[in-house]
Image (cartoon, rainbow, N blue to C red; front, side, top):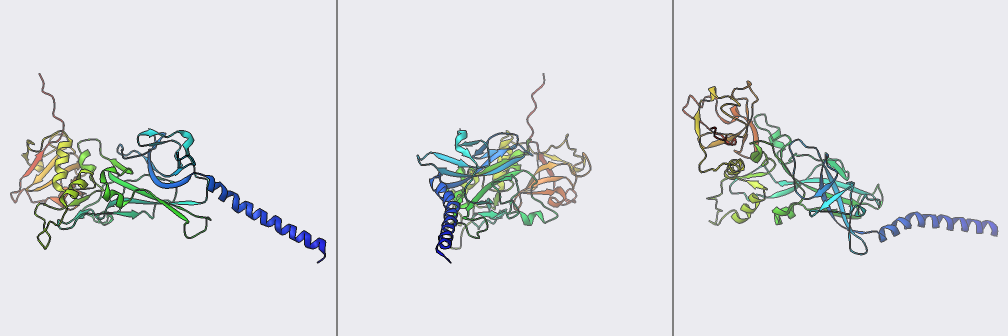
Length: 369
């Protein structure tokens, strides 16, 4: 190779190296100057609203909503910047300026979605309740996904014929992990940003922002919001083998107050009080189930009991108008479940002397006159 050819080859090599440096270095330099990511959040947006919100939301039953991953960053002045696919954002009750809400344009990021729930729908009296973060492998690894009220801990319940979980109502908490990769086909991320998880829920159950409560709009509302939570067995006399309390009752009360778990007593108390009635003065009347009629004798949300077994009436699913075994109720025997009345109360209970008692939770009608 003569001198001119060697000069040409070296020059070509330098041009190629400079091009590679430009392709590799410019994006890296741009990211180095870009706002610094610090944390991930979950924003919730009703599909008929223009703005997503970081914070708990009570959503109307059957409303469609979207979960948005949000990557919070700080620019060189320390001001926050929020990367998300949402076009408008509200944080801590304040609107974020539009210039500080933008889509991510840096190196590849994958979003992995989880729900944060009690570990099981039911905890025995001697088992302290705990929460876990469940990976939702069937959800898209996208910045924005359709919102769902779909607890993972009740999958076994959904497979039984006599009991099933609620469809489209209850309480759900969400968690997202944003994993940043140097290249799209890398197997391991170079950075990971996570939103509040199970540990955050244990530490401050009242402050978990990514919470959706979707309750039914009538007298069933308070009870329907309990689906997705965990139920704890009787705790008043619970003791461990050494005689000490097996449960931290203060911590348990905090979880109940924050609507993470409930007891049967708290479920019935909230259902009664939530409909404007006083548990101590609630009127119970003996009824003949064969003669009871939906819309006349009983309504959705009312209570029905035999002995100490109490259910919340859900809907007429059998012979139209008749209160029969196929009709559905909310049962809190071992976790919140939707069950046919025939699976809760023996069909021969009337003949065996067990009286059906009914308590109306409908609003009191104003006196005429």
